Image (cartoon, rainbow, N blue to C red; front, side, top):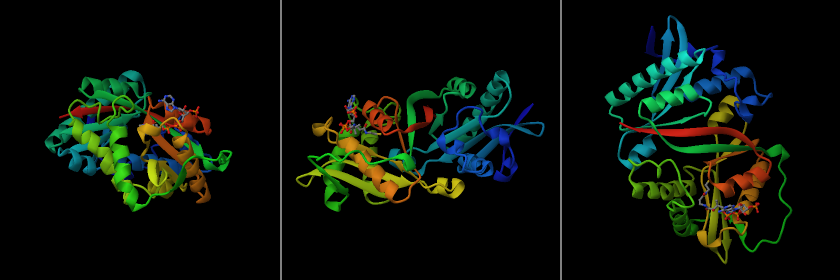
Length: 326
Ligand SMILES: CC(C)(COP(=O)(O)OP(=O)(O)OC[C@H]1O[C@@H](n2cnc3c(N)ncnc32)[C@H](O)[C@@H]1OP(=O)(O)O)[C@@H](O)C(=O)NCCC(=O)NCCS
């Protein structure tokens, strides 16, 4: 008989079955990081939320779930939104299915009781039993994400060509133009299809505005540590941002920067501006002794995939994203 209990971090000490047998990404396969640190990091991913559950059978933990209120999304969309993480560590397909079905049902009940109106989850494609159970619980697919990672030790600046634009730091006078670029880029359904726009229950206008707010927060230093702008005759043509991951530094001891947001004015695409922005950002990060750079993008953003593939990145993770309206 299964029981769902709220548990503490300390209950998870030593559960090495939290490691998948599948590929876990470059960071978790980095041999210079101890197994204990990796386990602490995995546990921290689950326990960062407000509520943390485990399914137990007798005294054995068979699955974990973490439910976290997403304050920023809640404020932006005006509905109470949460993100969910689940992992079944039960042995055998049938058991994993039973356990994840049981856990998801319980977490959804709790979320309902707490007044949540929307839940999102990013899940590995290998977690098939959990995915089937999510679908049974009326979670719907919204997008697929791919994360690339570059080990900056091996990265070298591209051969310098004379560029018809310059790339330098963001300046406050750039903001109006950059907001326009962000608005146009991320509201264009042909070129961009993210989890928010693909959700029929979310207000489209708010989905468009989300990226402008996010860009503004990057420029104000709240969501990014570095913002670079490509410009010609002082007019911004595109931008790229980078943010250091403090959690990875704390748990894994590596300096890792992710790229939260990047776009190029649609009137000047396919001229190598994005490629140059990426090269410049990676050179700066390398100079600042950053170990790795990462970017997460939709599986269908071909230009981003081409650039990151060509600089020798590796795939850190693949995620399917599901939402549920409560
Ligand atoms: C993605 C984006 C930033 C690319 O900007 P860009 O300046 O046009 O890209 P580049 O000119 O540097 O092109 C990079 C590579 O992608 C290719 N490419 C660019 N656009 C492409 C497209 N629509 N389809 C296929 N390939 C494309 C280029 O040919 C180039 O390939 P190469 O390295 O083999 O020569 C831009 O299209 C954009 O802002 N899109 C909307 C927002 C977005 O998707 N942002 C990224 C979020 S992660």
